[in-house]
Length: 297
Image 1 (cartoon, rainbow, N blue to C red):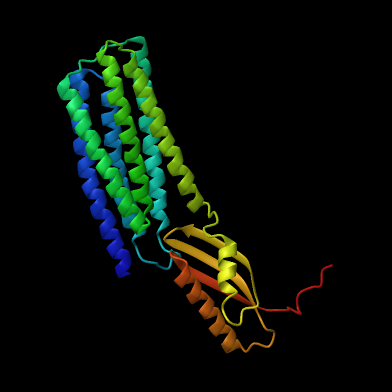
Image 2: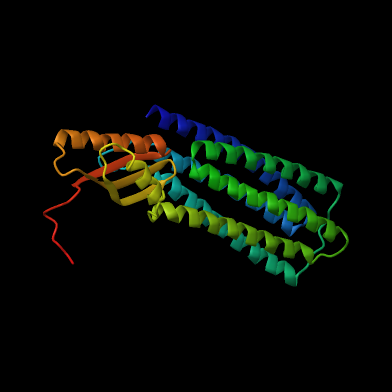
């Protein structure tokens, strides 16, 4: 429990810190976007706002995920974190649609943005902040096996790419090509949608109980335990930090019950020792030759 609470506090503190940075960057970009009348810069700013909203959603998700196992949730609450990451994807889709809608209006009513040296400097500074946030959040996310932090860093990574495209677009726009502004905004929207699809793909693997560990790895590991003759019917599911495994092992026919239980316990211990993230292991015991099994030819 202490480790789970400690993990929650680390993720929470990271999200709060990143939330402050995201909204500071968003406010600056939106102000510059309106002052310069640039759709692309405003779009980039509102994407940064969605970064902050995803942080808020992430905070809610990890709070639920950190709750202990109870009667109604015997497998715990960790999937709430994955569920919250899908909420982030939904926010990304909404932002993408909004940017495309505004960009199409600009296609038919082009306006030349008023860009100056200050606009360029501000965008470059915010780009540097975003790059630092991506690396910081991704590192902690991997250390803690946090879907929220990894998804959120992917969200911010899209912001880095988008800001780069905006800066390049600003150079072209400065040369007098106003049509580039909505084009860059559309490119931004596709980057955002791609990030959302990637988060949905990863989250659905967990929520739909896709295999978490290669069965061959577990089989080879279990067969090394003394007393185990064979291992089969291996199933795995869950998040990387909360993997559930159940399997069948075959023992010698006359193995005493107490010894069989001891072997199954050693199998469980060995799996949890060798496979990081394995939190629940269910071992079914079978005789090497089950005489009650119908003889099917």
